[in-house]
Image (tube, rainbow, N blue to C red):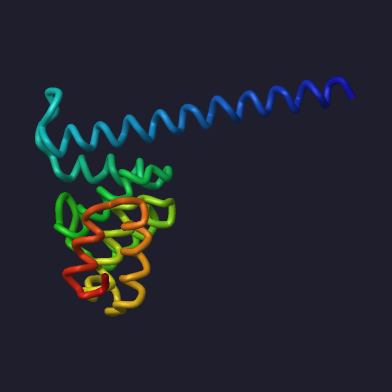
Length: 147
């Protein structure tokens, strides 16, 4: 029984270390992506590398990176332009509660960018964003007559 207890303690410690490392790696990848995007910290300006860093971080669940991946797909920055992919990444961050991603997703639905136009669904996401105090969502709601 003692060895089982030791095993459980060892495994939970190992899991904690792995989770901490994943979070740190996700954050580092996001920062690297920002450096490649801007050419900061002696990094060459490289949109493809920026996208690759954002994508790896986004795959680890980093909501800021998910939004950046969406931007990259929306604008064709470091990757081929693809609004359906942009919407997919905005949705991932929006579902985690990101007010800015909720606003971006809501606007995509209102305009029919990357998804079938659905002002009701757009308004739902925009209201979620606005309820968090995101000023941009209030502007978009007004712009589309949904306030």
